[in-house]
Image (cartoon, rainbow, N blue to C red; front, side, top):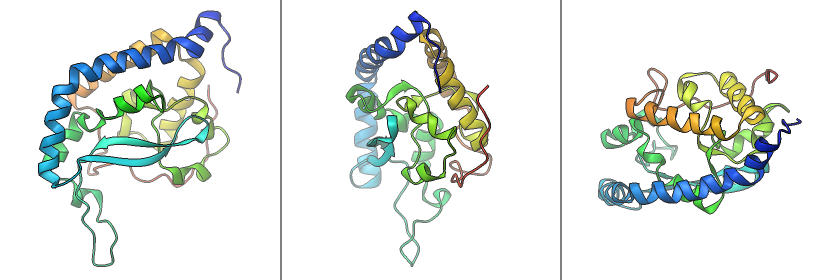
Length: 216
């Protein structure tokens, strides 16, 4: 896929985006550090252990990294050793944290490290890599984001097909002003707790493959 080659856009994509990610994430983490520490110790007591959830996810070019999140669910299992459904493991405290996306705060450390960007397609499960169509796999042309175009257009309330269309549209069109717009819209969505989950579900159902639609 050929990306637009406007000079200002190219400069931002090759250099400016990483600078904005690095410095803005440091500033945000500094501002949120009291909240981070409060949640860290509160969740450590709540879950009686490490409150950080780390999981392998594919990043840019499919390179695997470990995404960081605050825990919101207990590791409850059935008699066969399988994890119970999310709705049975989510705690009341965890539900509140997820509503306002506070569980995503540790990902600022992923951004500072360089594994993620503030804005980009969300990093999904490693097991999905083999299920993507050729179009859908292009979401890995850029670093995954803490938030993204799909997140502010429905997040977990839209279908997988819609989510991928938004991701690929972002990759084709993003620039500095578009990223700033997404950051501002994310802030207002977080304040309202908008689009965290589908009605009747705690999280998005698993992706099982689909017929992709072309980016317009």
